[in-house]
Image (cartoon, rainbow, N blue to C red; front, top):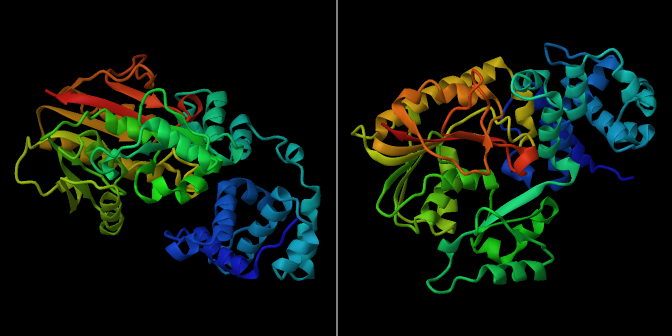
Length: 439
């Protein structure tokens, strides 16, 4: 087996203490550059409820509400992951973490841990929660619209540790000089020379896919560094493609950061649409500006404002609006494991209120016969079907691609103009998508 660098252990303990204390923004840019640190931090968070279960059941360790033992808590979390998941020797792990004799004796119990024994007496939802490492809250929410086997399939597909994740990326033709665009076949050949076996997507000619393990090779490739290839989930491309942006149309991306979807609007209109890319976060917009510049996106104004009160002088202003609304992220757990453990009624309600206000403002800002595309990277019906039901009387539904899955049934009926993309079905992130024309 292998040892963890002592510096990594010290930083990892600090990060886990921040997470235990529910502090946000744990991974700084500097920390993200340390691959070993990122690996252990995200792996421990990925299996947070499983590791906590072992911590409390087998080690009889409980959280101190005053936080005085959070350091001990963090050290035990690392020890459990190393021993149970990595099958590392308990004595070696104890030495790495500078455990005393009592602590070292305690973690030796982990050599005999058995999930079969641990799950005895648990109900089906509790068992599934521990098996696929997601909160029971999420399972109970999804159980209203899908059976437990479907929940299991979608969550396992989202989990990059399953080893069969698909990585999507697209050709950005805006980064090419005029008449210098490589043919799609040449791009595939170029990637193959670098050991990247990629294929063209069946629905979008400029979208490709490969295995997730090839991500690092793509990031190091010449085409990526020149902004000619953009790593992006197919679901995000599909959402933006529904806008069908045209030359001279005035289009608003209401929640634009980090700017990927804005860049697609520009690419699909060949930099001829007039785009306002708005976002509430000034910090995230810094990255948006850098990205748009790298991808040669023109005719775009970046605006830092609250999308609920967009500082636009007129109503009925935009030809088209993309509202990829802030949400719980329940369709993107593999991207950010931290999101899993924020799932509760309070977090959901906070997002629902924001989505409803953004939708109302989008209605005011959209021209009659204007197009609204609304999406969330969420599997919960509350952030999709139940949200658009509140505004349906303002819109005429538009047709979605046949390869989309139907949205959930509400009162035994599908809502026209809405659909879903599922990890287990489409190999994408989980998305709700609606396309409407304003009456």
